[in-house]
Length: 67
Image (tube, rainbow, N blue to C red):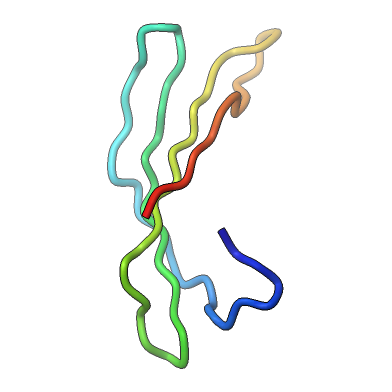
């Protein structure tokens, strides 16, 4: 996750995959890329967003980060 004092800059993201979970939720796996001093940092971070319909609208109900 980005911090104010972080020297990295956000570069791009790629959807790595998606799927339907058993509890009427859907998940999207996103890979995020950052650069530092014009060089891509390693490893990329992973963001998993869990969506579910709440009162007829799709909302993010859970998220997690991974490296």
